[in-house]
Image 1 (cartoon, one colour):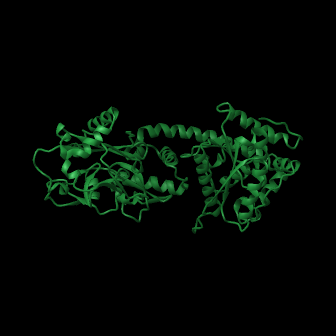
Image 2: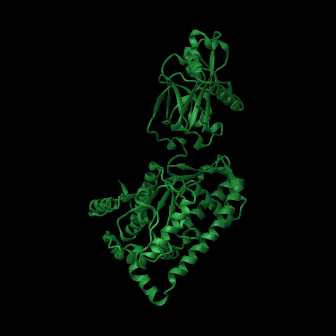
Image 3: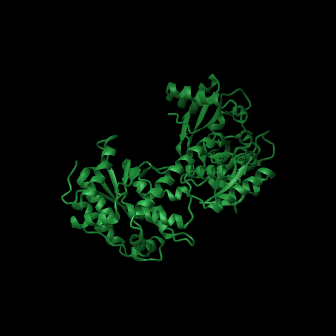
Length: 515
C-alpha cells in the first residue's frame, strides 16, 4: 500500500517511509512491521505515516510502560486508543527500571525498553522494528559522545539500520535524516494528538540540557551543525567497520571454544592498540555493554602482567556482572565478580533444577544445550535385566541409533568418558535424574574405596575451563552417578554385580540436537 502526501509538510515523512518500505519489500512484500510507539510526537508521526504507507494490517504498535512517570498508565491508554483509531494491532508490556546507585536512569530505561521491544518482536516473528529517531536526535547523540570522550563506536551514534547481537529484528530508523521540525509540521498538518513527557524538560538530564540550552545557540551560529555532525557519525561508522574487520582477522587466530575464550599468548602478541580493539570487539560479540577506556586499558595491563607471571588467579577486572579470568593460557568472562572465587558454580542458575529420565536412549536437555546418549555395549542388553535401555533402543529410529554410535566414536578420544560404563542393574536401582550443580559435590574416579574429591578439583585437574563446567549431573536416586567431562562416580558402583552383565556407556554431547 502506498499513499501520497496531502501537503508539503507531509511529503518528506511519507517519502522517507516509502523508501524504507521499498527496501523491506525487496526481501518480503508481506512482512509485518513493528513500530516502537511511546506516544510522543516523533513516534506518533512514525506510526501514522507507517499506516498510510504500509497499511494497518502490516503494522503492529509496541508500547513499553516504564512506570517512571505518574502519567504512565494514562500514556498507555492514549497509545492504545491512537493505534485502535488507525486499525493497528497494539501490544504493551511493563518493565522494571533499575534505580541502583551509579546507574543512569536514562540508560537503564533505554536498555529495558529495547530488551522488551526485541522480545515482543521475537514472540510475534517480526523481523523489522521501526524507530522514530531523527536528525536532531542523531546530532545530540554525537555531541554527547564527544563530550564523554567516546571512541569511534560512540561517535558513529545511531545507525540507520542494524541488527543488535542476540536480537531477531532489524532496527530501522527511517526518519533519521529528517529534522524534528519536519516531524512537528507533519503532526500539525495531520492534527495528531501526542504525549508530552514532562521529563523531557528536565535539564538535569544531559540530553535535555543539550536540546534546550546548547543546540538553540548552535542553530543561530552554526545553522548546518546537524548535517556536519551526521557526516561525523558516518565517518566514524566507516572507520569502525574497518576496525571491526581487523578485529575479526585477529579473532580467527585468538578465538577458542567458539569465541567464548581467547588464547592469551595470541592476544598479548598484539600491540596495545590492536589488542584493545580485539578486546572491545570480543566483548561486543558476547553481548556486553561497552567498557570505558580506563577499564579496558586496565584489563589489558593486568593481562600482560598475568602473561608474564603466569598467575592467572591475580586477575581482577569486573564488568557488566562478569569477571575477566585467566586460566591455563585462556582468557574468558565468568558470571559474578572478582570478589568471588573463580568457581564455575557461579554460572549455574537453573529454573529447572532436576529432570527425570524415562529410559530413552537419546535424552536431549535443551536447558543445558546438550544430549545424553545411553549406548548399550553388547547383545546382552536385550536380557530381562536391561528392559529400560532395550525398550528405549527399540523405540528409537535407525538415525537415532546411528547418532548414538557416532556420538560414541566422537568421544572415544576422551579417555575418562570412554572407559566408564555402568551396569544395567545400576540404572534400574532407582530413579535416574539430571540435576544442576550446586557446589560442593564429590565423587570417586578411582576404585570405589578411593577418597572422594570435589568436582571443582577434578575439573581443574583435567583442565576443563569454567564455562564448560555448567553441565547436568546424573543422579541415581540421591547418589551422584555421572558427571560430563569426568565420568562415572565409582562410589555409586560399589554394590554393582561383577558378573557378566549388559553395560551402558553414558556419553554427553554438547550442542548437538539428536532427535
